[in-house]
View 1 (tube, one colour):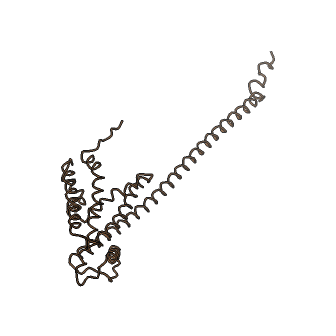
View 2 (cartoon, rainbow, N blue to C red):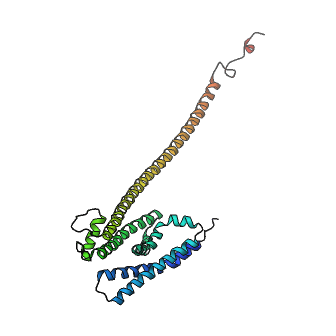
View 3 (cartoon, helix red, strand yellow):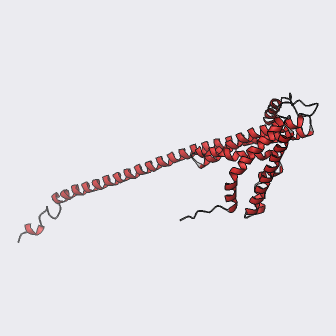
Length: 277
């Protein structure tokens, strides 16, 4: 009997801390976007939003440190989870933690392969949405005060983010500041990465469909071969039975002929009976 592997301490921590971190990510997104969308907020409100941002950064930093300490192989954990470290170092990426909540929709999938594919699709769609939103907020925050800015409203920022992520780049809006251009570079990389993920996901789906069709065809071929082999074996048995019947009939036909043959010992007379005495 196979033994069920118990979850590690790090997995238990991640399961317990996940809902709280998701709520903090949503709270951070609101605190990050509000001052940008409404620059005329009272100073007290702006300070409160900044405090929320600082608190969420501390929470995610503590979560990362705890997960490293609870890992059996700490260096391996750091190398295999670079995104978690980036989330701590770059606060603007923290709202991507909300995708953990969205991936719960993957339970409607029926097979393990579909579950994995559903997670990929959710991450791609969710990642593109959040990247565009965060990129628009960041570039609006950077460009709004520049006299040469072509991005002055959230509508302009969202339009610029979408055209940048899709590598269309109409050129009607563009960042004029160094900070805005850094945001643009990150958004371009995110767009190319997401496009590659979509292509890879589609290629995987097509490969799975082709493999399933080949497996079904091979299964049908194997079934037909088994049926044909059974029919050949049955035909061979019938041929053997027919051969036995023919041999038995030939044996019955030969026996009477041997009894009726006058030249045989039973049908002829002995020469000694006809000789003169």
